[in-house]
Amino acid sequence: MEFGYDWESLDRLSTHRSKPELIEELLNSEDTSFIAFNDLKFFVTTNESPNGSTLSVAWLTAFQVQPFLFPSNNAIKAQTVFLGQNENNQKKSYFAIDVTNFADSFASQSPEKYFVESRPGLFQLSSFDASIVSCGKSLLDWNARNVKSFAFIKFCAACGTATTSTEAGWKRACSKTDCISNKGVQNISYPRTDPVVIACISSKDGEKCLLGRQKRFPPNWYSCIAGFMEPAETIEVFF
Image 1 (cartoon, rainbow, N blue to C red):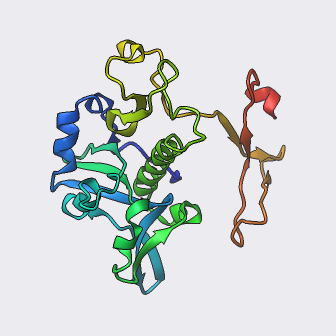
Image 2 (image 1 turned 30 degrees about the vertical axis):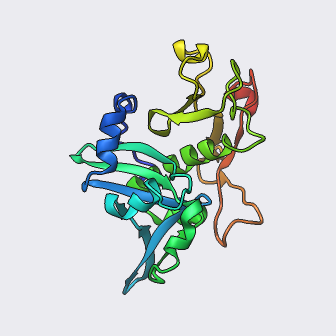
């Protein structure tokens, strides 16, 4: 059985995130690949074959993303997130980059390349690529939400200064260097994680299972029963 996500071949290298010089080096490496997101839609290319068309990630190089990292028109530089390196090729690194503010730059791309919603787009990718896209989207979404005026952690709880993305996109901390929150772990914010339960409910004889679907699902698309767990709720109580 092939699972939808597969991190076995990607080392997240969390120890690298706190080394800005190393991250900067990887951002400029010719061995680094970038997955671009525009309003959380990811950049893909269409591949034609005798069996029909398929989607794959339209990877960008470090050279191609330089205009988004060092914009010349006083625009805010694009948010990036370090996702890790390929365990089978330690030179190969992966980043997600939010190009929402630079979407016009992609207008001249060939018609085979475009931005697509993660669902159902993810289901047409390999397990490895789907894992990278889903992680990149989650972290870019978290960072983007927390620079908006209504965001819960836009400002530091200790001094009120705006927070900034740190550790290669995996944390948000106060941008005031002498703030007390930067002298410990009191107000460093981490991506929100919500526990979810998903299960295949089968009949006693194991011949049937209970599935569900929503109106917005594509044709012939069904799902196992799933939902968010509430505080102090156990898996047994959930079902």
